[in-house]
Length: 282
Figure (cartoon, rainbow, N blue to C red):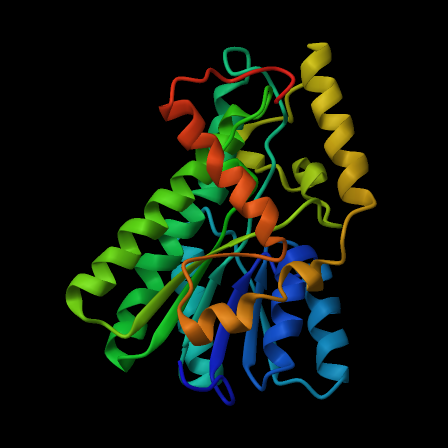
């Protein structure tokens, strides 16, 4: 994209955390933003906060795990703004942090429903719009877990590996078609001040009651460690900082801590060279 002024963006998981940071960064560059989230009250408060500063924003409640909700989000965006140029598939959950063989099937379903199907639904609903406009950009939120998985987080790690794979295929598909549609995976550097480790507050009712915590001490340490780190983490706006440049220059992988990204990306190479995963990580 040569300019962002006057363009329209859609950001899922935008009521807080990285999604809100993305919206703020885009708004600062003259983009109109449709914010989407499953938490309706928090979403309404965020929209009101941003609109109070004069931003051209709107909100739409959506569960990205539901294809009909995401299609309704696309329809609402076109109805409100008349276009959609930038699609940020950002909504994500951590999972319950369980060992891979004891994690309830419902936990896997929940994580993949939001983290993987949320991206798939975003692509299915918005790519036809971008292609018809012959202009657009897709941003999928990744993680260090795109490259390396930790104990207790097999579902989350698998979901973020999938996000990277889907994004790479989409990037190559757009190139093969000669389409002017960019694709970026935003990798947060370090830890970010978000509520993702408390994701079970949005546990889907159709999956039954929230399963009890895994008594495994390693899983408990991982959960407690990340919960504390996120509570004291970086301002999400910092994480969203590279977003505008990535859209303007069509960068595929971007991170607010480039050195950390390079280190994380070395992990698959080390596995390919014969190293085995270690605990604690080397």
